[in-house]
Length: 590
Image 1 (cartoon, one colour):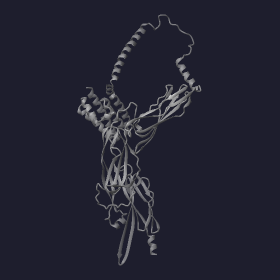
Image 2 (cartoon, helix red, strand yellow):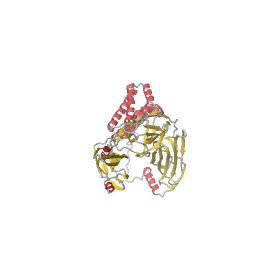
Image 3 (tube, rainbow, N blue to C red):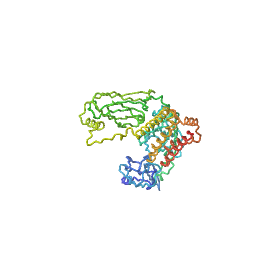
Image 4 (spheres, helix red, strand yellow):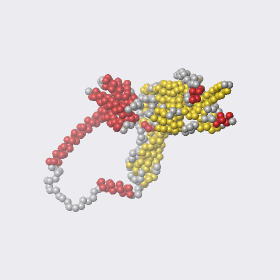
């Protein structure tokens, strides 16, 4: 009878705060008043709340003797750390456990989330595949050997536009539950983040003879846009470590939800790296801009058609490399074919090896006359990073047999040509001009003829002067530098009005680098801040103006990734770029 009463008294109690702030982490604990418990399962946590870690299991036991009578009590507590991501009122359903052979359920718990978020989005989840480690006691020191981040690049020396995989890995001997940090500001790189699972799973790696729990935190594929020594800066992450508080009173832990854990904040600094970027060898005239490993293929949807019927040539460029940055392949068609702009389809994806997949180009052409025609191969020249050499690949040639059309389309074309070239016979009455009243030979005729002759001579002089100027390529580049930069800044201004922040900063950077490259006749492979500063000094540009241009470059590269007021930052960057270009142009005209 006593055993039956004891089993009937077993309960599962829940403890959680009723009100929390958005972005706040809080504890959710379940306590069953027996150690004979198994099969614990929590109710479905609603969206808006996120389990960061748990359950942590702790047990308590106590003994008491009063007037010779001994009594004992014991309990097990299951602890979860929850993040309140979104504002609202949420109800967590009842949890369940088998206690002493009996099914026991808790009460549902209601939690109200209010206020502003401390950060956007929930912290990434961490799951530990190695649960045999021991949690450290509260107050234990955490050294740099206990928790650190390693930064690695699969290549430390590459060519321009050659992809690099940058990896951040976390190594820990302590219970790391959350990790937050600002992503690096990678100057001089076109960067794309590799999507990793939101659920971060630890695995074991041995470092210096010690087994560490390790997780790949983030990865980036970077395409260097400049040459020289490019720096990847160090960044600081803020982590939360959970430690066990063994000094807590077991009775206090029982009545207060089993809060036998403390959280310790820890800053972890990820080191920086230096990448050596070499310029590509002298580019061939037909270079596509592709760097990597590519292949090309083509197919014609039909080889036997009628005149004025459309035909499509599909060209597919595939492989691994900077596929999104390559130039469109050039397809040459016979002169009797009408050619239209191709339709471009992007079938690429970002992987740890870089951008992989295919770029598809569909060329639509219409043959106008019957006969047999040859479509020559489509060539594609790229830089092969594995062979360190330029390679030209090409498709097969195609033979098209064009038969006579059905007459409808050809008749329409002939009618259009007839209306332009052959006029109908004029009908109706005619009018005769009197002798001497004709325009030919009149004073007005000779005046107009003289003016035309003078205009011809003037245009001949103007065009000859322009041809001489155009022959001086260096001078023409310098002369058009301001105009090209102004056009790019106009495009950047439109992007700023549309609040397209990333594209805006890319366009301003292209305007600044392109301006000095054209103005100072510096090849793209030699563009660097040091070269620009030396060339400007040679052109007698003062240090203050040079400093403004360098500051405009730095501001643009910094603000691209800086948090804060996006419109205010873009306005500031746009003004700095305009001022720098205008002042350099004025100094070089003197």
